[in-house]
Length: 217
Image 1 (cartoon, rainbow, N blue to C red):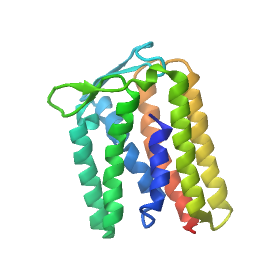
Image 2: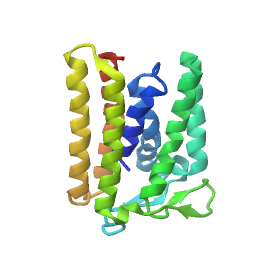
Image 3: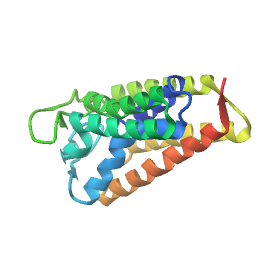
């Protein structure tokens, strides 16, 4: 799941209007903020295996500290606690925490059975939507469109930046999604880790910039 995670961040603005879109976008991709760091440090492991699923060539060998259900709950509690301490917004903090956990749920739908429940072994789960390319893109595209529409109709631009920055980010996410869906497998691990690190920094900052130039209707 890629743009589906961002979709939940966009949609969550209705439930947590006091929170910046940057933070609302960061929360559902938080596990993917942690994962490339741990992968770069060799604490978690993956390798490139074309054909692992019809859609995604990555095989996630070991990533329980970033992507287990238990740790997603821990990360959600930590991020929610930080938001509560910083803003005093209980609803927003709860939404942020749930958005973090939502990452595991969406990945469980798309991944092969490689999603762990906890970091200490045990069963792994996944419904393997990635074995069906068309279905993957339709589901994720519909979810993304709904999330963006929710945000776009709940807020309005204060200036031209609020309009063009929003649709610029939407276009970038859509183009990146299509390119990654039909492009060749990455040639090496660094070609996965480095773009992931850049994306999880740039996209939330861009979303926060958008929110500064829009207001709740």
